[in-house]
Structures are given as C-alpha cells and as structure tokens.
Image 1 (cartoon, one colour):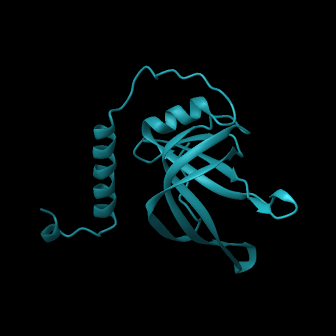
Image 2 (image 1 turned 90 degrees about the vertical axis):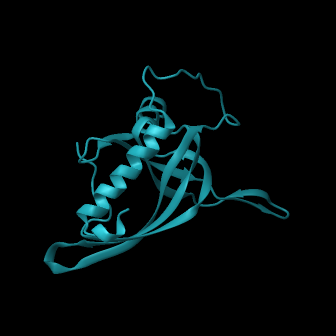
Length: 169
C-alpha cells in the first residue's frame, strides 16, 4: 500500500519549527504504509482532550482536538507493533497546519484545514497505565535515520526542480 499524498488535489502546509508535545488517546487503528521509495510510514489519529478548571465546577471536559500523526522509519515499525486504538500516549513532534482542496462531483470543490504532527517520539503515557518494553531485533541508528531523511529531502527537491546546480556545494 502506498502512502497517500496529503490534501488531495491541492495542499498548502505551514510547518512550525518548535517541537510540541501532545498527550491524548490513539483514536484510530495505526495504518502502516510505505512511501514510493519504500520507506515505512505509520499514521494514526490522536484525540487530545480539552479539560479546563472552572471555578465552582472543577474540571470540565470539552470537545477533543483530533490530530493526524505520522511517523517514519524505525519509529513507524515500533508504533505499528506497539499502539492500539484507545491507548493513552505522549507524542512529540513538529506541528503542521495543512490547508487542502478536494474536487467534488459536479465540478464543485471542498476545502478545509487539518492539524498534523510529524512525530519524532511516541510512547505510552505512563501516568495513565503500565507497559512492557522490548527492543526490536533490528534498529536503525539515529545518525543513519537523519542521513536517510536528508538524502530523501535532497532527492525530492531535485525532482521538484528546487535545486539548481550552482546552489549545490
């Protein structure tokens, strides 16, 4: 199964450069996909509860915020093997606001925005339960992962025509 392109027919993304941390529940089953180059991707939805302290009422639950979470490489394999729907997790990553447009029947279009997180770290929330840890049989070293990401970004920029020979050292 190939990883889908975000946003359908047209998408614009704004990526935040500050790492953010979310605590919530896995809202969907984790889907395991692969990029066109064969790199493993895992995606799931995260429900982040909205709780507020209201004087005289105490803690009040509001509507949750749902985020699309994507992870790559070894983390994708570990997330796929470890997480189930409904489990409490902590997710650290980069937040992205994706604006999309989708063609509808009859020539009309639909548009919207979605919050997405490209996670660098995911784990069970141990304030809300216990878990058992085991190391995978094969692990990719972080340096190898960073190199693979950088090489992939360079290849993508070259394919998109964003790199000119005089800009490449």
